[in-house]
Amino acid sequence: MPTSAARKSTFAIFALNGFLLGMWVVHIPEIRERTGASTATLGYLLLLLGGTALLGMQVGGRLIDRFGSRVVVVVAGLALSAFLVGPGLATSTLGLAVALGFLGAFNGVIDVAQNAQAVEVERLYGRPIISGFHAFFSLGGLIAAVVGGGLIALDTDVRLTLAGAAVLGILVTLAAMPALLRPSPGTTRERGTPRAPAPWTLRVVVLSLLAFVLLLSEGVAYDWSTVHLHDSLDASKTVAAWAFGAFSITMTLVRLVADRIVARIGAAAYVQRAALVGAAGLLGAALAPNAAVGIAAWAVFGVGLAGCVPQFFSAAGNIDPAAAGTYLARVTGTGYLGLLAGPAIIGILTNWVSLTTAFAVPIVGCLLAGVLAPSALRRQEDVRGTTAG
Image (cartoon, rainbow, N blue to C red; front, side, top):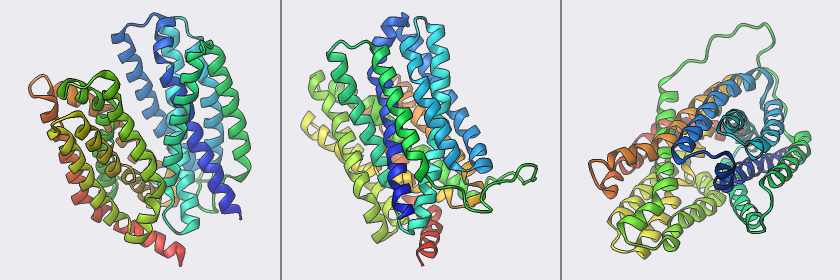
């Protein structure tokens, strides 16, 4: 079945993306030592990585509308794999900056392209399957943490490790390429054919806002969950690490089953309820009296957030198949801004209020998503129902 093969290949691309990014992340301390970058400089370099990723998303969206997601996925997958070697080869902050610029740009392109491919596959299936793709992205990151950590323990040269990961990435991309879906007739713009810019409709604005507030919340978990346990609940560093571990595990597991729940109750009802679960989880973390309760609360937070954002991406990709890349780029790009901004906003607020009080921002964001999701996602259920019929 062609759609089954396309689904498996898209799973592979998502897992590969998570794996390649994870291999960069686990080697950050070693790469920082090799280049002599200070903590402050590393912060700026990570902002550069995020900024070029945002740029890549917007360029990628236009390329998808012109050539289709299949071509863009393959080119970006090959390029991302190749440029993963760059940070390992860098011996100065300037060299690392250049390497991260390319790495971020192609990560932004593949982020939009793989989601566009996922939406196309989901459209053919006629039922929710997009959360499963994001689960494989998380699995790829977990595999990178295990493999990368093991290679670091064996004192393997980072250049060799990243080169091996790059070769694997190229092979996986080429193996996935034949089964990826080609663009349907009429969904790409022919060369020289004028087309009015895709409008910023109210629905696109709301979907972008929802992606922003929930990915902002996710970013808070990435950067502040362990700090919360260590600083606010006096947990040891080892115990504190379990806060993010619990969040990551529940995020991955729930994404594997979220599609079945969405198929049963609908995307709007799912996000409405799940966002409220997320708000309750983070409120529980803020009020936790000890580390055990805090870890459990962060796990609940992961349960709530896991399947929400993929529904926004699916909705964006189905607004207009001929402009799916542009709309996906807008929603994913705005969401990515939230992912970058969330940790910074919390950090700034801690100059005036406690860390747990600052958690009010993502809690309110989750509540807002629960209120607005039904109006933004109800048409998505119509699209799936029509396709299935």
